[in-house]
Length: 104
Image 1 (cartoon, rainbow, N blue to C red):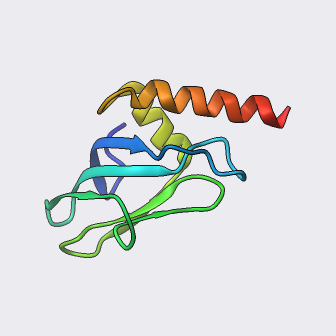
Image 2: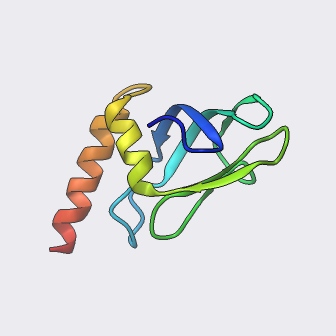
Image 3: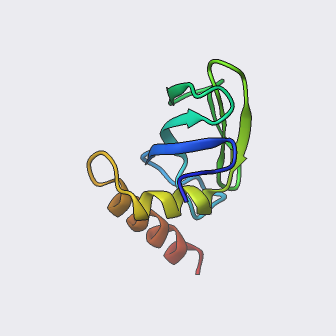
C-alpha cells in the first residue's frame, strides 16, 4: 500500500478543507522516498505537490524529477491505514463524510 510504483509513502496529511468538486480533501503534506534515486523528501506545495481537481495529487521527486499522479482514494486509504501527525485519519474521514452528506 505505501508503495505507489514510483514512490514509497511514509507520511500523508490532508489539507484542512474538502474542495467543492470532490469527496476527498486536498493533500497537504507528503513525505516519501523516490524509488528511482532513493531521495527522501517532503513536499507541501508546488512544484513538488500539485493537487488535482476532482481528487488526488501529483508528487515530484526534488532530486531526479520523477513524477506520479496518485488518486484521492489511494491517499485516503493510506491516511486511514497509517495515521500520521495529529488526527489526520479522523479529520479525513470526518471531512469525507461531511462532504458526502452535503451531496445527497
